[in-house]
View 1 (cartoon, rainbow, N blue to C red):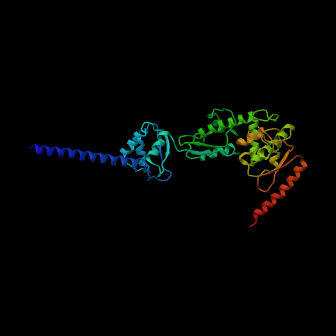
View 2: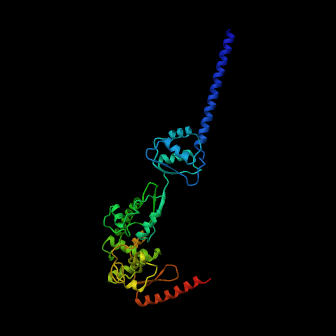
View 3: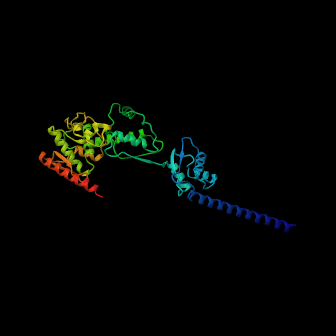
Length: 355
């Protein structure tokens, strides 16, 4: 009987260790399976898929949204364990997140914990006027539209600048935004950036320039911006305008006339346009225009307050399509340059028309 009892005890011990081994093996398998889940690509999602975490979303809600977007990788228990392990379940950040087939669950949850939301870009182009800027904002996706139905005056009021003319007030550069932001959010940043850029330019202005305020510097910079797209020419053009302002000579710059014509401008400036007086016609009026005529970039602002030295009072395009100009000190030299421009322009057009 004692022998039978010993055999029974031995059987129980063996069975216990077998069960323990099986449990250990199962635990190891589950852990390995979990590791493979956490660090393997989620796959299965369409290109461009995203998931949004809304305010108040608990992790089970987010997991249902992931499943709805085609994330079939792993089981719910694995996702919940990983969310707890990475502290994501209690640290979810609101926003839109990109879903890529190559992304692992660990990487995705890390993004959600750190708030690395999907970002979009909107670029304000140097030389745009306010009409062009607002049209581009209306077409920007997925930017929320708050200002589309506002007048320019209402827009500036919404920005906190009642009575300010909107032209030239938004710095040309690229702005990053998220799906939850609006066109007003982008404009606020662009307006603040322009104020900072104007102040920096005005602080660094050269002595003796014929400008009385930072506002005048902004106006002149906008004219320079519209006159040339060649960066190295901006100081020279600023020099021409500075010398004209000093001697009381009209600026006589076509972009201001075009701005005065407004939306009816058809691409051609006629003699009657140069002689029809408007507040923006610098052929009929001396000095600067009453407001900027476009959005100047930082380089145009710097040129406006640091004009190049020299004697030139005139400039005209070369006419070869390069966008470059010829600068002249006298009217006779300028007239000769205009004549060369007409010849070069005609030759360039004829060459372009050849089959």
